[in-house]
Length: 72
Image (cartoon, rainbow, N blue to C red; front, side):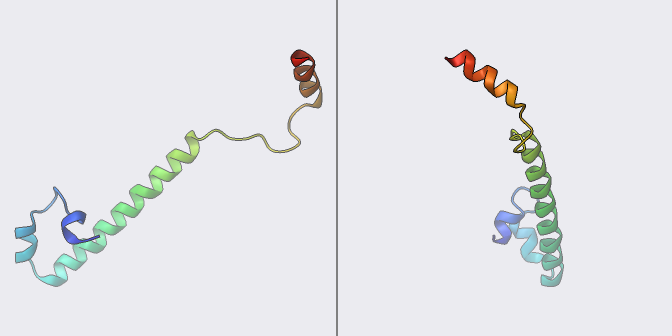
């Protein structure tokens, strides 16, 4: 990811070009941490929304038999 993509709509490239390189690198490191945290939060939200499959052995056998009887 280049600086233009990383700071898109946050800091104009012309302004970044005028800043000391060490400061720009520090901004880059902070932005990378922000993006990683946002991705971590997004993944956690998506895992909560995904349907959870029942753990093997938790389904009542009589419910399965009733379901099979209904299909017959």
